[in-house]
Length: 166
Image (tube, helix red, strand yellow):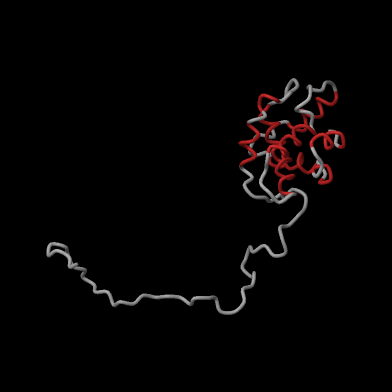
């Protein structure tokens, strides 16, 4: 159907052709770009644990707010930040996104799902998690996560609680 006479015409006529690239890449592809990760993710102290959908752990951690048994001087935000780091390390160890079991293990090995400890154990736990929720304290969260060995993270929550003490 032809366009009505009041529709303006294009000042530049279309030539009927446009650029089209090759249908496939010629030659092999090599990982030689700057910043390309070759041979898997690097591992080491304070490098973190890469895994999919890690932000979901923060949403899951909010579900534990009512269950946390905090001692005097402990703050829920600090506890959540430190334990989310441990949960993310466990989830990345299995190559999956975080789930409730990861957070339950993290909270239980530090004793936040049991009755709050007293004395020296409470002081040690308070020092370990102090200010962990502040965004400038990434190294403290990494220290908490690195403190838990991978062998403990591969256990269930009850067995991990028995195998690891703060």
